[in-house]
Image 1 (cartoon, rainbow over the protein chains, first blue to last red):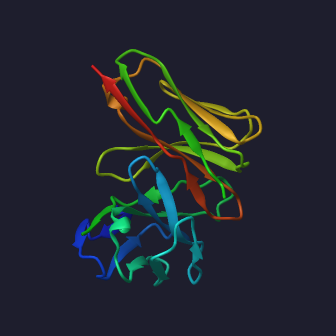
Image 2: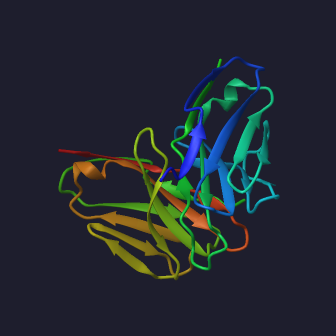
Image 3: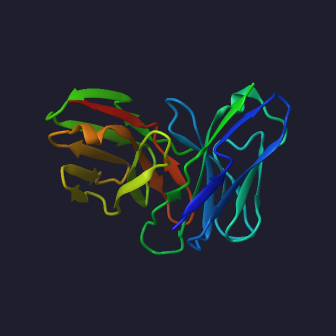
Length: 115
Length: 111
């Protein structure tokens, strides 16, 4: 079982370059999320998609865009990378329409460095 | 803005000691979850607590949800080196579809 797959695992960008982080889940979950993790900051929500066709801003959306391509895939785009976007990025998915609080499943992360 | 503050931020203890990690917020959550994260991996769910005052036990780990559903604690009895990792609490509010994560507690258990 693949679960949540993120690509790439590592990336180095120069300031001003653009890139897209890919995320795919095979659990047929409705909701998907992008988080960034910085030392001492826990996980901060960038954008999320409650269901296919919808996206919403999280706590730290500036400098990012997202696309919910279909039910499986949710991509995160950096249009003009900045050193402040150096971080580890996690994609997650869950089935929030279930009545009981759902578990969020995470990918292994993308470690991005902007120089 | 919903915030979850965890304390302590870092904890280094000897094998066999007990410890408690706290997760506090001014916001009410429908449920609260605890995740553990290993280096190079994504967080993995340990437990979900839903009812105010609820206590759940997972072997040597005891989780409690505050009566007002604004806070939670994680207590580890007789810590082992295998408990080493980053512990994250996450609040979930029905209808928002969002998980708000705490600041994290990095635990190191020395043999």
